[in-house]
Image (cartoon, rainbow, N blue to C red; front, side, top):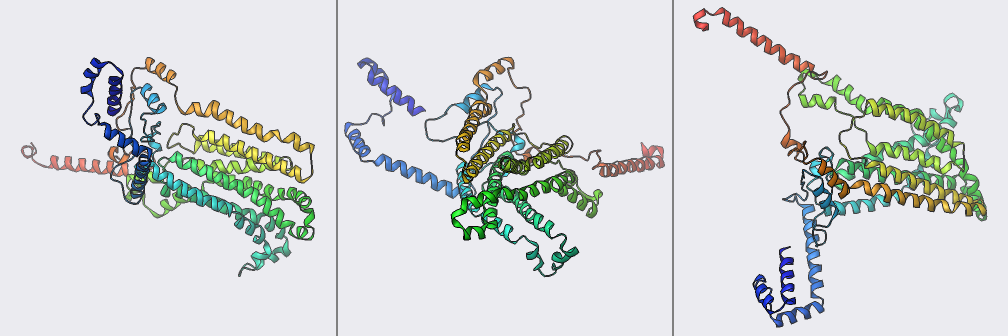
Length: 515
């Protein structure tokens, strides 16, 4: 900035008369008053592209520093927090470019302090962006290869194949094969749901330990996005693979009737997804209510440890708060929505099953939200726009699927009437993004000035808000709650016994010695 002022003063001096130039010339340092030969040489080098080469070398040097920092532990943090007591400077700082250089500093509204992952806060954003790019490449490759396990599940999750496993021969002959059809219908669903349940743990480990995301909400958003696309691939690859596997013999015998065979096979696969929705309704929702993870942890700790011998931190860990994991819950609802959207017109029988699932899901999750889930951080509703966007994207994909199915069934006028629907969905999504999502991320300057005029200074300012909790943690004492009652009673009893022992000794001594 100082150099810009000097250059501006020099240009002003050159544009004025001789007196003004003489007056302003002392403002320009000696290195600015360069000879004509130096200026001529610099112009020749500039025309030769040397400045472009120098800028490229600077970019290589910066990239090398980023790579070195990603390998070694950097000595300084790349993230800092500036707290203002009024809203106007916050709005200005986050809305305007602060420097003319390319991306020297990225200013944004700070997340809530409870939302921060403090072990990842110091990581440089370029390192995180590079790792995110690499992770997206490998996850995209896994998405393309996702058809392999799904096809194997469709092909091998049968009673006859299970009976070949040593010790499970009785499955095929149990009750004279009465359960054979039931197992063939539900075994692929159970295996598929088991594989799907593992994906969020993989995405969470990638976002936390490899990409080094700095907030809990950022980790949850990455899980929601990636899990959603795997759910989408799961449904449509299952439809394609199931249709091809079911009608493979007919396609080989009559390849000229490929579209006709697929058109007759696709509606029959709705039974598989009806079984999936019924499984989620009758088994998935009760598991959400029972909370097997918290229940097993509580049972294990209470059966293997003595509460009187646990520290206060260990007791708090036993009865810790149960947050809602958006990266798990949102994609679960997306899966049901995509299934209903896709088969709503192809096989309308799936709609009552989907309505039943959402009816009981509303009851279960309302109860969990009111009485069980406790928010551990506040992200300002950043998940909701992503949920709306993903729902509209699923609607657009289902519309394209129905148009393709109509094309397979050789419908012409239907395609003409259905063609505008995907464009209307995209337009509505962009309208919501511009009208509601983007304005909600920042406070307008007009509103900030108005709020500051009504409130001169923030009364709840805390200088420890964005310090690491380990540096601001206060001394914890045993409380009188349900978990800490044992320790509290032990300490209280020991104090009372010590007080009685002291009083007894004082009363047993002569009066003069006691004094």
